[in-house]
Amino acid sequence: MQKSIEKLKELTKDVVLLEHAIATLSWDQETYMPSLAIGERGEQLALLQGIMHEKVTSPEIGKFLEILGAGNNTPSGIVDSATTTDKAFIKELYRQYKIQTRLSKKLVTDLALETSLSQAAWIEARKKSDYSIFKPHLNKVLELTKQKAESIGYNETPYDALLDEFEPWTTAKEVDDIFKSTQPWLTEFIGKINNSKQVDDSFLLKDFDISKQEVFGRKVLQDMGYSYDRGRLDVSAHPFTTTLGQDDVRLTTRYQKDFFKTGLFGIIHECGHGLYELGFGDNIKGNLLASGTSLGIHESQSRTWENIIGRSMSFWKYYYPELQKYFPENLENISLDNFYKGINKVEPSLIRVEADEVTYNLHIILRFQLEQELISGTLSVEDLPEAWNSKTKDFFGITPDNDANGVLQDIHWPMGAFGYFPTYALGNMYSAQFTSKMNKEIDVDKSLENGNLINILDWLRENIHKYGASKTASELALDITGEKLNPEYFKKYLENKYKQIYDL
Ligand code: ZN
Image (cartoon, rainbow, N blue to C red; front, top):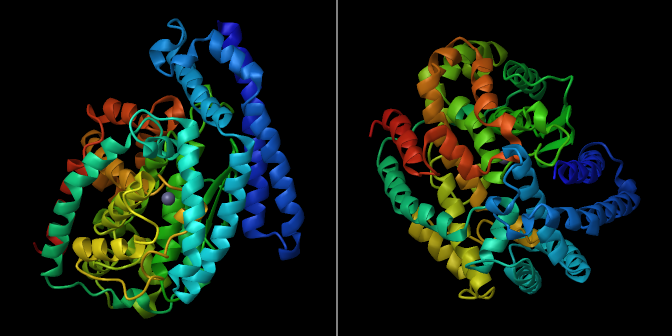
C-alpha cells in the first residue's frame, strides 16, 4: 500500500511543478509581458495545460487510486492503515482525477472557446450597458456549463457539481440554508444602519500620493510576516495572488490616487491569501495538498486580515499616528475615531467590489440565488436582468440605474465560473468563526495595539495554514470551533462592531 501511495505522490509531483510553471507564465502576462507577446504566450499556456491534463488523467494514476480503494469517494473507502494526511491526499487526488477524466476533450475545448468569446462580448456589453450583446453568449455558456455538471455528476442538484470545483465537499443545500438564515437579518441590520447618522469618509477620497501609499503598504506587508525572499508585490489591472513555487508566492495590487482604500486594503487582502499559501506544513510541501483547501477558506484568510484585523480600532491605534505622518495634508485634522468610522462606512450600493463588509454578503446571496435558478432552468437568460433588479430592490432597497451597474458588472458568468460567488460570503463567515476562537486563545487587541501582527500570523499558521488541503473546510471549522460553519458568528461580529460605530 505504502508503495502505491509513494508512486502516486511521485506521479503528481510533476502536476504541481507544471501548475507552478503555468502560474509563472500567467503572472508575467498580467504584469510585465509586452503586449505583442500575447499570441505565443497563449500557445505556451495551452501546451502546458494540455500536458498537465494528460498527467492528471493518466491511467497509471487511475490504477493506483483503484488499488487504494479511492473509488468509493469517501474516506472510509480508502485503506484504513494509511496516515490521516495520506488519506486526505488520496481523497483529494481522486476528486480531481474524477472531474478531469469525466470531462470530454470536446467539452473542455468548447467551453474554453465560448467563454473567451463571451468575455469579449461582455466587455462590450458592459461598456454600452447593453445586455442584448451579451445574452446569446450567456445562453451558450450556460448550456455548456449544464453539460459540464452532468458530465461530472452529482448527488442532489447539478449546482453541486459546479460548486465542488471551488468549494469542495460543500453542497448547494448547505450554502442555501446558511444564506437563507442570513439574508433577512442582513437586510434588517442594514436598514437600522441606514436610519442612523451616516459617518463621514470624505477625507479618504482626497488625493493620496501613490509612491507613499506603496511605501506604507509594503511596511504593513512586512509587519504581517510577508517576506520578499519568498515573494514580490507588483501592479496589475486586477489585484491577485499567485503561487509560482513553494517559496514564491506573489501579490499584485493597483493604486488609485483618489481612492486610498484599494491600495492599502487591497494589499492587506492579497497578503492574507499569500500568507496562507506560504504557511503550508513541511509534511505536505510540494504535494497536491499544499494548496488552499477551498476558495471559501482562502477568502477567510484574506478577509480576516483585511476586515477583522485591518479595519479594527486596535490595528489603527498602532498604525494611525504613522499614517498621519505619511499624509498630513489629508489626515492631520482627522481623529483616530473618525478615521476608524470612515474606513468602516456602511452604505447599500450597486457594485459588489466596492461594497463594505456588512452589505457585501447580500451581493453574494443575490448572485447565488440567481445562478442556482439559471442552472436549474427556473430562470431564463432572457428574464435575468429583471430578476436581478427586483432582487436588488428587495435586498438593498435600491434599483440599478442600468445593466452595467447591475447584471453586467461581474466577469464570473462570462467566464463560466458558476458556483464561484458563494465562496466570497463563506469566507467572510469562516473568518468571523475562526477569529472568535483566536480571541479566546490570544489577546488579539493587545497584540494589534503593540503592532505585533506576527502573533496573529502564528495562530493562523498553527490552526489553519499548515494543514493546506489535508483538512476540508468543514473539518477545519469543526476542529477549531467544535462546529461546522455557523453564520451566527458573523452576525455577532457585525453586531458588536457596528453597534458602536453607528450607535445602534
Ligand atoms: Zn480574495
